[in-house]
Image (cartoon, rainbow, N blue to C red; front, side):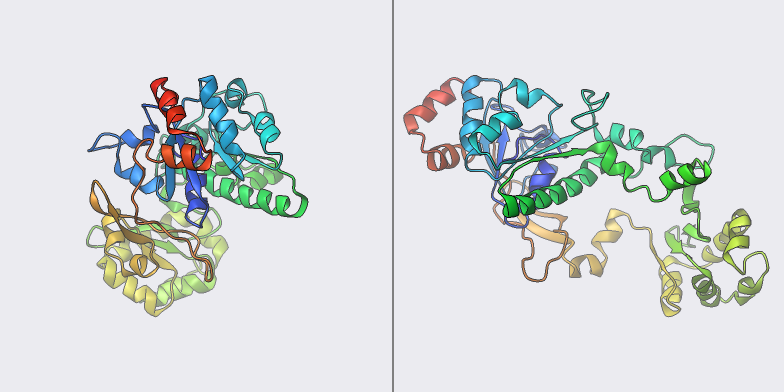
Length: 389
């Protein structure tokens, strides 16, 4: 049961639904998930809604009304997992917190995604991805040295990182329940899932007092050249010379073997010490070639490099299509839509995207409340008249 809104909570259910979970999406009566309106050309049916509501069945329920809360308690008897991303204490005020749900189904797993977690001095603060990325340390690292911190790619990055950990936690909890019959709460916070991905910054500070600052396109502090470099035709390549052998391959690929033996650059330590000068030299080399020619040179010498793609580049790249990371679906409103495929790839039980399109608001009220809970048409009509569903 997906009780969440927007991204961080609902995408946990989306990821699980792609691998066969039956997902009941619960939306506010008459309003629906705000994601329905994001960039919507058609009322209540945005392209991003089509992408993230896939494989779900939708019901409406006013969680603030006692009769709506009663419906949720009835539904939880049929659900292994409940996902939500309200501020801590909200479900408890509505009488559908963990203890309330556990009273109905003792082995239920409640997955809670919030900005700061269920505990701690900041637990009650509102949290969105931009805030989680800032508080979690990621935004500070994005930008040029001496410049302002920048948005690290997508403004919703933490909203997608958190569901990965949330789905992982759900599977751990289900595995534990398989062995013991015991349910539990899975608590994931936007800032924590973001912070956990920031490689060496914690141990570097703990061990040596290093505060990593913005490095711009230079990127990794322990390798050089390691960043983004321009091509003659206005493109960019990502280059990762993580060791001396890779640097030697680069020099051979571009016909500059002299750089491999230059005492300023021959080994990693002097390359790091002379990084600014090195990056300027690499800039001057890569900018002599068109991007595709440059990448072909690197491929021949097995240099770790690739294009810095925009979305048009991605659509034109055969690898994305071969790996089914771009998939075509038929949407009832927009027709053919291309959206991201399913991750990860499993050999025996691969994930799928149903060709049914995203549900319209309350589309499955009768199927779920009538079929699953056995409520009569008269009862459903009464709930509808009261605005409960």
